[in-house]
Image 1 (tube, rainbow, N blue to C red):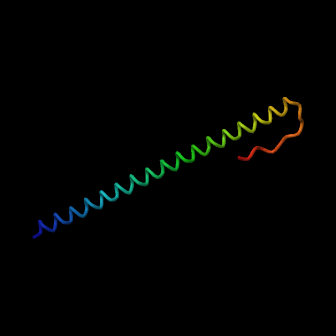
Image 2: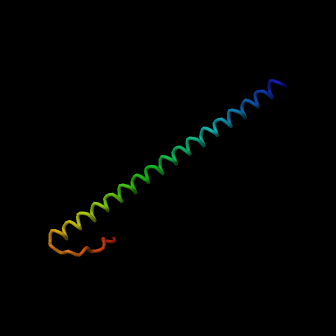
Image 3: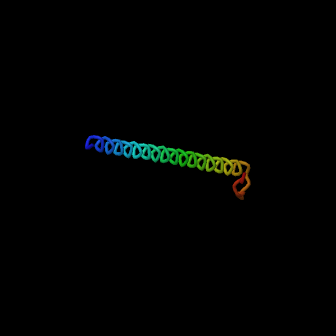
Length: 73
């Protein structure tokens, strides 16, 4: 009887460990996805800033002194 109980306890422990490992993996994947999204957003912002700078330079080259507001898509 004791051996049967020990086996059950071992099984339960193993299941808990597996669940814990799966949860950790899921959390890590979610964190990686969030980091990738943040990097993409930063890249988009940088591209927008570069476009604004190019637009301002073109206006200066044309000789128009006033600056227009940035383009909103």
